Image (spheres, rainbow, N blue to C red):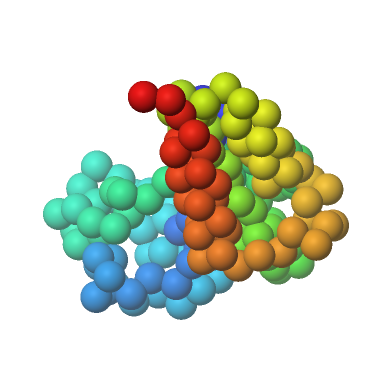
Length: 165
């Protein structure tokens, strides 16, 4: 599952910029969407990473982009950073909103491969490829994050239920 492992050193802190934060949800303070967290450094790193929970950012500790952040930063934008220009920022934010749920779904599917029956593996692999293919952005595959999660879990359940005991 290394394909869907986050590598913050290759990202520009998209997860600390794009989503809105609400203190009531386990963030130390409210933050509007598309604005940098107060603890994000100029280099795109968390200044309180080791002390996140103690600083009131317990939700950050449980977050995982499943590799979407570094893929967007490095592969889609060639190492550009959202802070390079407002135009690049807006494009990267839109890309993150589109791709992060797809990488999460693909990571769940990838993790399920060890549990599914052999005849379901090709279907799971094809879905992973569809979710993470750049052409998906140009296709009709524009489901909401909640629908992606629901459909992904349904596919996993059906593939696991086929497994012989």
